[in-house]
Amino acid sequence: MSKKHVLKLEDLIQYNDAGFNMEQLLVYNNSEVRLAALKKGQEIPTHSTSGDAMVYLLEGEILFNIEHNEEVHCDECGCSKSEGGVCEFRLKKGEFLRFHKDERHFVKAEKDTKMLIIRL
Image (tube, rainbow, N blue to C red):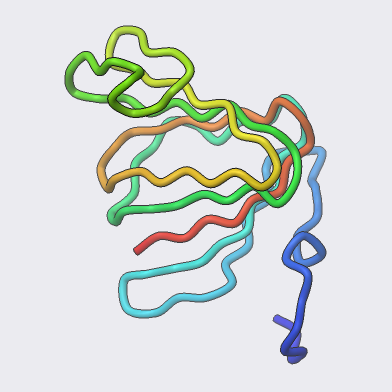
């Protein structure tokens, strides 16, 4: 990582034609900060995290699905579509999403995308 104090986050990670790119910026106790870059059409497969997390889009657009153990209504979570316990969110540059630990989720880039991921 650079020794500079002021950095542009989107400049710290590059796109990779072979698959999504993930860079760890900071780890402290059980928390971490990462950057991810996905080219249009690339996916981060369904997974869960050990802590609550947040995603902030620096550029681009993603489809972010969260699986729930029971049926959830869109007005409860603010998603754009809910079907069979899966909530769908479409995030664009400048938007922020938070989700809870152990919630299985999936990400697909609708456009070339760079995002900041914070896990607590």
